[in-house]
Image (tube, rainbow, N blue to C red; front, side, top):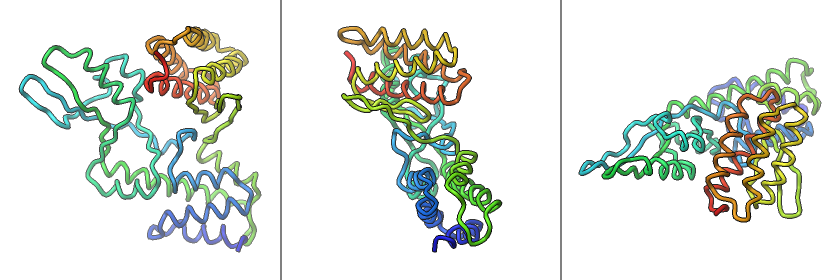
Length: 304
């Protein structure tokens, strides 16, 4: 069976009527037969959804519109179109302009049949509070949501299939019929088509601290402080002086007896801005992971 897996995939992957979920399950088997943990994880994440700690492929991140529901005097408005740029600057620091969809394939396929789908998040709730603090008396927003057309979700599903076709094409190009590609060949093709998307963990006694490409973790203040220390070492090696200063600034905010939300959120926002301009993709991913952890903790009640 092992030698026929890749051949079967090559024949089936170009058939538009072939269920994508079945093709991904064949990838699970192919990953097991070739020893490629990366292929198995990609297929499993697509089928079951991406956990918070895993970096999501680019085709699952979209520029989504927003809707707002609010009260202004005696007028009640529901689901009005809204732009991310209309949010206060402080709110934009915690709410990404792009929406990353981590849902399982089956859910995406079902949502793609709808005209539009609304997505909420804890960060949008925090942004709503910030927005309301800027509104005049008599006005109050009570809901912010991303709004995604079903056609866009169908495009994401199509992106998964296209990535699979490209991956299989790469693997069959240099592999004789009836043979399996090596693990190195599978991992190389996966990296070329999807990029790095897995976690590098450094374990601490009090819990996991994730640093590296696709890193993400949420835990205690001590965990975050350790992650920042590791991140500082990476930044120094890359010669990123401004980033190092920003890390020190956030680290200082954490050293208070009772770290406050404001300074932590502000420091995380500065790191987020700098992450877009660092020269190393791995460092940029690591910064983003730490920022996400700090932001989630800041608005999750960890700080005073």
